[in-house]
Image (tube, rainbow, N blue to C red; front, side, top):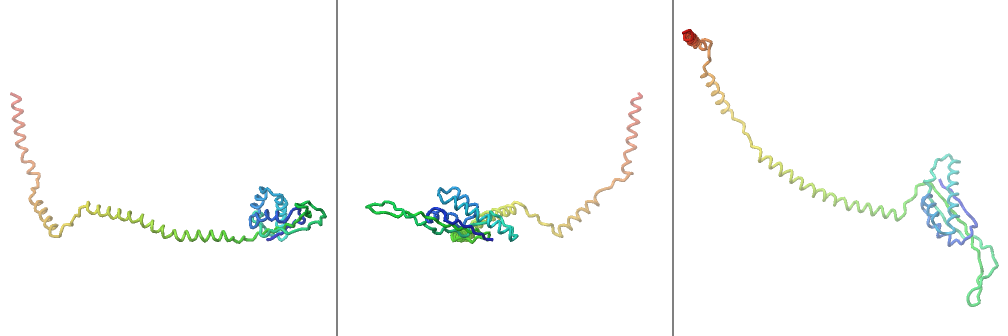
Length: 222
């Protein structure tokens, strides 16, 4: 979407108006209006009005064509100042050494075109992006080398720790089959040598205990 606004027969020389209009070329409309607001030039106010007229024309044209656009997305695609008429004033102004200068009242025409299309990148922006890509490409190998340097001490520490753990933990050898068989035979022999106490053996001391008890009772009676 593109729209044009023109201001004709603006009082002022085109050379002075070009100093102001060069400030907003290729900029976003909101940024351009801010620049014109704080520019201390007589041509800034009429140029700002022309820019606002171009924004209004773009909005109206979008409504007529049933197109939705955001005024903040518009940018100044084209802007220039043409020379206007001099009004053919027949007046003279005194000059040095008895000469005379002819007075002229300059007028100019302002044209501003705004667009909502994607703004092409300037040479400065393209150079900045190329420099950024170059820096990132150069910095990638350096980052990898730094990461390897950081990882190397970590790997060495881990290997040393594992080696220390291997030294500290004693290795227990599994018993052989012959040792296991000999141990089993010894346990069987010990089990055979153990005498089991039967109830008869446990009752052998009972008569002696009863005799001692009777003897004690007789002594108490006497």
